[in-house]
Amino acid sequence: MERKVRLIPYRFIAEVAEITEVPKGVEMIQAPKVWDKSKGEGMTIAILDTGCDVTHPDLKERIIGGRNFTNDDKGNQEVYRDYNGHGTHVAGTIAATQNQKGVVGVAPRANLLIVKVLDQNGSGQYDWIINGIYYAIEQKVDVISMSLGGPEDVKELHEAIQKAVDHHILVVCAAGNEGDGQDATNEFDYPGSYNEVISVGAISLDRQIADFSNSNNEVDLVAPGEMILSTYLDGKYATLSGTSMATPHVSGALALIKVLANQSFERELTVPELYAQLIKRTVPLGHSPKLEGNGMIYLTAVDYLTEVFNKKVLQKN
Image 1: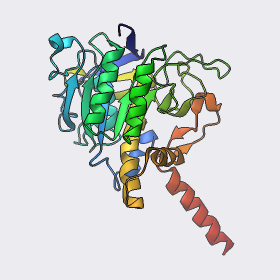
Image 2 (image 1 turned 90 degrees about the vertical axis):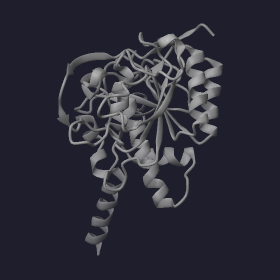
Image 3 (image 1 turned 60 degrees about the vertical axis):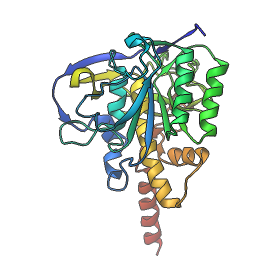
Image 4 (image 1 turned 45 degrees about the vertical axis):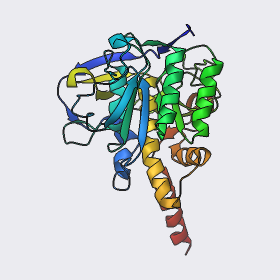
């Protein structure tokens, strides 16, 4: 299958050698507020991207393995090194270790499976993506995170995603960066526009819809995607913008939510049940549903509503 899928274009802002910070996006979705209950322990997230800087001090403890499906490194399946930077940045937002230096991810104790399906130029064949999905299924991951896409609706890609969902795997995808800031126009990217995936749009750190974020009726929710600080190549850090950066916030959040839900219900929840738990943890921002879906991921939304309800009950009594 010679048709190509690509890295969803993103904007590189700046690179820094050293930093110690909880990224603003991680704080914005309230991740630190739930770390006393869940840090994603026992959850495995497959990142289908450009690989990863496996020696990065914030990531090396989180990586449990991976595979290369591209032609980089002469097609050696055991070498899933990142020469692009995009995959490393995504990995840090999901699960950078809480080690009192560098950055920390949304789910700092989740495991990462690095599935390299895009080459050093950020492009790849659909076969690479599809094979990567089936590999993630075989590895029995909990979440598949894909910050990639293309304009074509490819039947085999759709079938692979459906198979992943059938195996109780949550699939999270970037909505795409071809938006114009208007809900009157639709922009579709695949796999982000498949109904089976959780499609993530981007907002700025002041909760405005990013102008580049795709709008369509398949967008499920939004997350911080502008000026996002995370891990980068050669042990460094960088600030990037794109729906690619919003997606890992939701992938990491799902690792936290799955731990919380399993504790609460004392059983494994189904994909639709976990999706419901995710949407319960969103807040509307007042934009069109085509732009923001159900709203912004906000992990303490349930606790906040419970607190408000209890206060009202006390006032009535």
